[in-house]
Image (cartoon, rainbow, N blue to C red; front, top):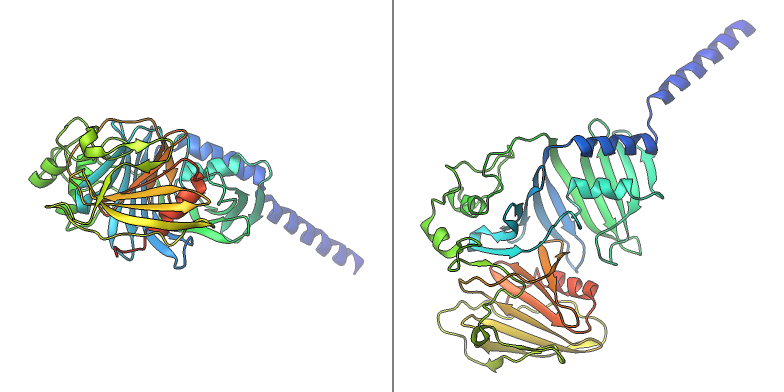
Length: 400
C-alpha cells in the first residue's frame, strides 16, 4: 500500500513539473518580444479605442498599418460623427489627412521614432521591455504586463497590456491616470503580422482619393491599399484642392499655423501678451463656411472665458476665444482656404483622436485639425498637459 501511495505521489510531482515547464516567466516573454520586433517586417491591426477624458466616453475605430522601415498609416474614425482622419508617414513626411474634407496637414517630424501611440505595436513592446519594474501575469490565453506609461504627458501614468500567447499580438491596452482611472482603452478585433500592402498603400494622394472612390470608406479588411493605378489621382477636384507638398496652390498645410506667411493674411502675435492682433468684427467673411464657435468643456481652475470674436483679415471664417485667470491663452479656430506655408520647427503631441503640433519657446502654440477646422491654442504660461486636456474637450462639441 505504501509503495502504491509513493508511486502515486511521484506521478503527481512529475505531472506538476511537466506542466510548469510549459509556462514562461516575464524574462522569457520579454526575450521573445525583442525577437518578434527585430524580425517584424509589417503588420495590420484593427479595433476600437475609447477615450475617457470627458463627461462622455469618445469611441474611435482604429486601423493601423505598418511596413518597414518607417511607413505608417493610422485611420481613426469617430464612431459618432462617422468622420475619418488618417495619420500617414511616408518618405515625404508625416501627414494628418481628412479625406472627406479634402484637407491635409503636414509635419516636419520623425514620429513615431521619438514618440508613439497606444495602438502602435512597437510603442507597447518598448514600454514592456524598457520597464525593469514591470509586473507580469500569466492568464489563460494572454500574457499581461503592467508597466509605466510613456506618452509624454503627466496625465497617463500606468498601462496594462494583454498579449496573445500564441503570437504575442496585442489584444487590449488600458492606460490609467495617477488615480488608477482608465483614461484610454484599446481593444483589438484583429492583428496580423507579415501583411503585404499594395505599392501605393502609404501614398498621400492615394489615401486622399480613396474615400471618394470607395463611397466615403477608407481602409480595407485585407489590409491592402485601395485599388488604383499608380499614384496619379482620379479625382480632379481632389487634385486641384489638395495638391502636394511641392505644389504651392494645394491645400497641404506645411506648418504650425496653417496660414500664409503673408502678414496681411496671417495677422501677428504679441510675444509679450500671447494675444493675437487680429481686428475683431461681427461680420462673417464672404464666401466662407461658418462652423459656429466651438468652446472647450474644460478650462483649468481659476480660468474663465474673457470674450469670443469673429476675426477678419485672413480670408477665412475665423473665431478667436480669449481666456484669462490662472493661465492666459487664446484659442483660434479657422476653416483654412487652399494655400501652402513654410515648415516650422515643432514637436508632435498625441491628442488621442489625432496628432497635434507644438511649436514655439516662450510663446507656445498647439495646432491640430478636425473636420476641416484648424485649431490653435497659444499661450506663454499654459502647460502642455493643460493644452491637451483643453483640445480633447473640444472634440464632441458642435458650433454654437
